[in-house]
Length: 139
Length: 393
Image 1 (cartoon, each protein chain N blue to C red):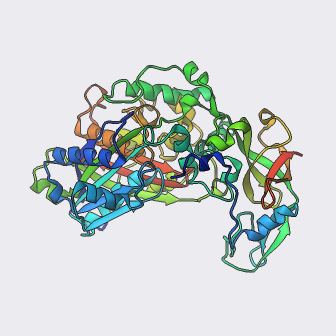
Image 2: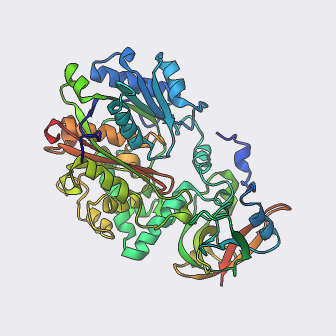
Image 3: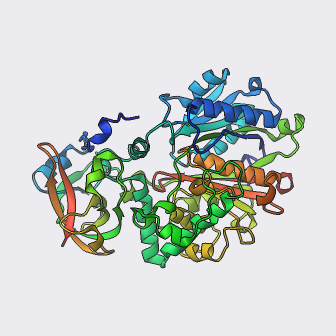
């Protein structure tokens, strides 16, 4: 259970051994996807091994940033006090050009403008000195 | 189905429920113990007869091992116990695992018990935030993603793929409110219309406030024992566990294989196969209803109607009395109560009471077979249990 004081702060990702490179990449302006050298599976969610074949022969390549909205929902009731000032905002499930799906939020426009299958483009948004979040704008 | 499964080997012999809704001044442990006392009294057993306890975490309780803390509070020392965690699906897994433990000889009398105080034990903001804490700290939480949002995106996609409408979603809430109006102790009983739902304000599109389940206090408890022992102690109307199934398809919503077809297809398939019955045989159902669209998708995935037709099925009156599968006859999480992980235990309480013929004016005539489906974490976890009377063995 979290305290009332902690609930006022937006959660920031704490990179781990599996994900540190991706978060570093975002700080440098690229979204790194893991490409499996053995089965050619591409994954966004960072793991020390391929989710499909278990191989550790993975390499990072920058995503093109192009994607398409698979589904979305505009949040009007914030998940706790830290996000209250941001509503309404659109949460997106984006299918990246390379294959993986990821979750993020829409920037650079009104949330009500988001539609299914809308083409979107990655925006690396710096939150503070250590964290940059991958968000999407209309392409 | 084979003799090695737990089909018909274990019976529910006692059910109990604490006060639900707004229950100030009572801890989750008290709510659990109150429900447990009632379940034991219903079974005609003493707490000393219990040798197994299964429970799940309560957000408003500091105990990591809730089942153990409960046993201490209740003054028992079980020889089989666990605090299970597969979010909303935990309720059905407690029945499945409890039955398996009895069938496998790990315990003789298992108390399934859970409770929480989400309404008065936490502020509303903290209750929501606590639920959100169960999402991934790196990939989901930084974006401000409420639990409702993951479910909303599945419902939204269902609308896009199958033409399901907001009015059809709303109808689920309307039907269940009507059911709750006949349920003593239900938290919300005032009649609502489709327009009321559509005008209740957005939570996260396509869900309005009245598309969303309640936040409640309360707990429920059940006594499970072998069919043989149930006969020995002279239980009048044992309700048997005929089948159980589970399916876990993903952790993260963005890795869900399909937003509109869930693990409930497989969990229910396994439960039906073990029970030797199909969806058309069920007389009543408890269908996890954290949101209205969840019910529509589950009616499809549990096999009550074809994929994509859930909205029309509900609008046609098929989930209420006189329809194909009267569901959530107590009002469900949407109108009866939703105290977090224990929420689905109220569906069990209702379906078992229906099979015992104890539901008074909400009784489904001739109910002999019932299904309860529990799920959680944006459809990551799914568990199904099929229950039946003596005649269905």
